[in-house]
Image (cartoon, rainbow, N blue to C red):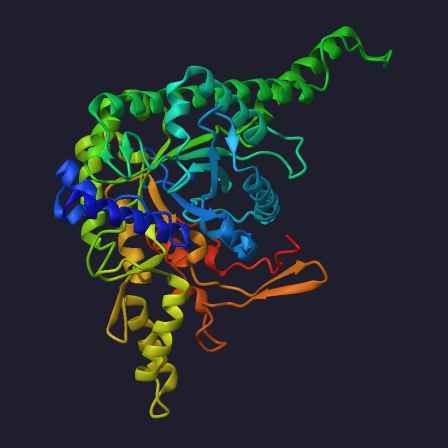
Length: 517
């Protein structure tokens, strides 16, 4: 395909993304630029989990992106049951100053964070752990995202300039991560950098090598600066927290005349001992998470590997393993190829940091038009129900067969139009693959595209907004979420792999509506 046509394709797909689609575009121009294999034509387009395969292995996380246009309809009480990390998408960077931009979205993100934290508090009080917990106490983390398609323009200028980079990291740390006094109940648990993407221009393709190198070197410095600032601030706050917990400091003397100096000394020693033993990880500031989204095209993995600071200071690398051309935009073979590239170019030692991207949407064959899984399921169920359930014979048995058939489908065909997507069975297979290959977890774009497991009622002024349960396609005696929700499919598969605690996480309902949270 000629360069002008490639540019037009990218422009149109970028426009499609801005009109409400997933933050991703196709990568035909990347194929020509980096000579990647035809089966991997993919680019741009949710406490760490402590459960593990055995006592020496790493954790397995479930990340879910949640963009601001999904906040109003989000049931955080459900989402904290299924995700170890929710990534609030997204803010921007001012290329001229390095400061945080998109102030209108900032308020939306902080407001959503407040409700998410309320849901997490309920989760904590009920000892409900994220999926895959093996008995140790964990918490769902909330990350703030910068960038994404159409929102990444400020990265390059910021990372290349030391003053701008320092200004950005300071503002991020003080205003978004450690801002415990804000009106929304404190800060985020970490940051996700979604730069789409270093050394690349959507109009021209990859930049000259020198420019590519500057972007990746700058990205490495940004990650290093972020980690150092996060750790420094965490250490300072841990120190202050430790001081506030001391019950008997050295200058306190017992007022009980019957107690001698020996007993006072013993009390102080015991207090210090208690302080050291009770100052657990759960009481201290949890280590802040830094994650980075990338396109598993082979080229970007090699560029990461060539800049060691990127590997060193990133906690998780989110591979966006979707948006391939053809009938199925995210086939199982693409997941396999993504892991192959990660192991080959990033190295086996980095695999525990890599997450496998899972799409909660489908794409139309040839045109690339997207449709959420929620909408696909509604159409698919109506279509299959017309074929599968009749008044003859055992209706319950026929419904069970229909459910299993629908869960296994990965294409929707109507009026000669085909949408390829990942159904529950495919999601389960990919989760198992990521687990078996030793990845750090899975990542979802995006959590709000799943079918809704429960009715959500939300106050909007004097009115009550109702969001119906769109997973509810079965009889009242069946659990619809377990049958059709992709989030539940992840949790279910992790349970099959031995990563759930005694409480079946997908069967818990705190019964609270959005406004109660």
